[in-house]
Image 1 (spheres, rainbow, N blue to C red):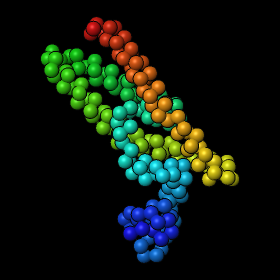
Image 2 (cartoon, helix red, strand yellow):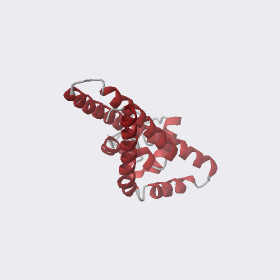
Image 3 (cartoon, rainbow, N blue to C red):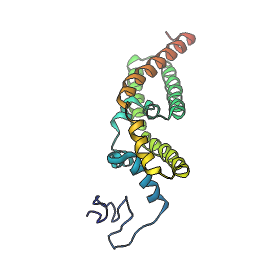
Image 4 (tube, rainbow, N blue to C red):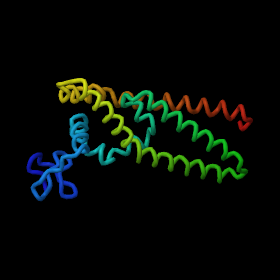
Length: 187
């Protein structure tokens, strides 16, 4: 069934955009107000991001995804967390004598970490964006236009950011890892 107000597909007997329910009543909650801010910002990508259907890019590039979406401090923190966990895991793997076991464990770690990032990065992106949008709403009376323009501005060079920053952070990670390996005598 589609919402009579917005013509969107209704989920669980209510419209996630306006709160219209199939019985004719409306849900008026804080969540719907937050969703309307996110919908203004994401536009046609609203469903894709809020329902986590955009998992391929976070799977491939990991926490660089947050960095590229103009959350630089949060992105750097997540990248450092990934570097720390990866470094610890890869160094601990060298305690095993069997090369095939190490390769299998490295592959399993990589696949598992990528699945975790693909699962949570859109949620983190959504929460950080909502926090930013609430600040804009408090300060600006014409917040709707400002929010729509912000999305266009934030995503204008997004693919270029992915292409540039992903290799840069990968090279930094490899250099850090090689330094740690040489320091520990593992190379």
